[in-house]
Length: 188
Image 1: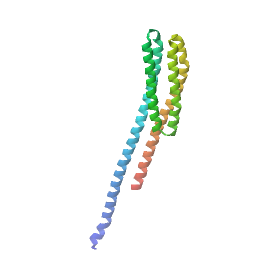
Image 2: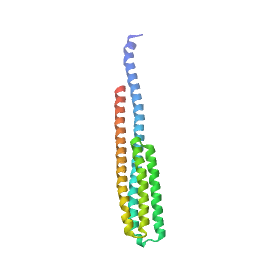
Image 3: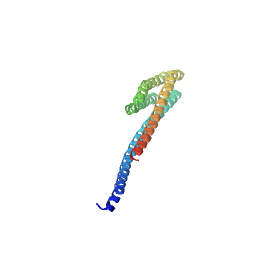
Image 4: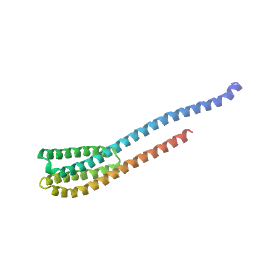
């Protein structure tokens, strides 16, 4: 081997190794960013679903009080429609919560499991208040006292679910940052 080739070989090998490591880093970094985006999208979808449940619960509460306030001017068909809408909204919320429970971690599943009976109780108590209000609107509004207590408990569980979802996003971001650092150090 000539002297020129011997002198050029080590820098060429180093350049090839550097380019190879750079390519590996680029591919690995792209894959990692895609995974992070996917997890972030899943987290946002969970938070949006949770916000839909919260919004539906607030609307349900408002609809029940509106129905109770207008009970004297509503006919039986309107009352039956209000009760049917209440049940339909409750079923939709139960489905959304079930989806959240399946997609969540153990603490989220526990919170969804705690929310499910609270929501069922709230629906039953609201329906009972509407039924009692058919006799006397004041009795129906008084019947909402237990529903309001259940509503407060359900709101606390929803707040805990939202906090857990936020914590999961923070954990995922920290894990992604740690992974990126390790990748950079290894390939550096």
